[in-house]
Structure formats: C-alpha cells, structure tokens
Length: 105
Image: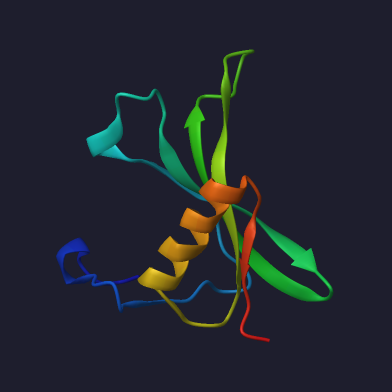
C-alpha cells in the first residue's frame, strides 16, 4: 500500500490494480498453525469484471502435504475498499464457508 504497517487504520483504503502479482504472507502471531497466511491469489473474472482473490489458508499444500483454505474474499479491482470492509467479507466467509464478494455495483 506504500505506507508503514503502523499507519494502517480500519478506515484505510485498499485498492487492487486489475493486473497484480500473486503474493502470500505468513501471519506471524498465529504461526502455531503451520503456514497460516493470507494469500493474494490469481485474479478471478466474473461477468466481465476482475476481482482480486484473498484467501486465508493453512499448510504448505505441496508435495502431498496437507493444506487448505478457511475463508476467501473476491474484491473488485480498481475500486477502493476499507480495511473494515475486507475484514467483514472475510469474517462472513469464515461463517458461511463460501467466498464473499466486495462489489459496490
């Protein structure tokens, strides 16, 4: 986002470009679960719109090792959303065991 972690607030805006690089990051305070992380996966195209794909995942998922996803959110690219909106979508995904989509239209 181009700002320090300490400067991020619940109201901070996040915008994913239509073309972005996949990325993943281990959630260090919760590393009791092997490989717990939030991944930015390949963009998804739905009805002609492009969505960034965030997944809360665990494990390595390689070489036959176990892994999986707890939650996911599809976030319309080129549109700003607050940290709170993204957190809410992931919380709803945890509860429903399905992807939640952030799209104002």
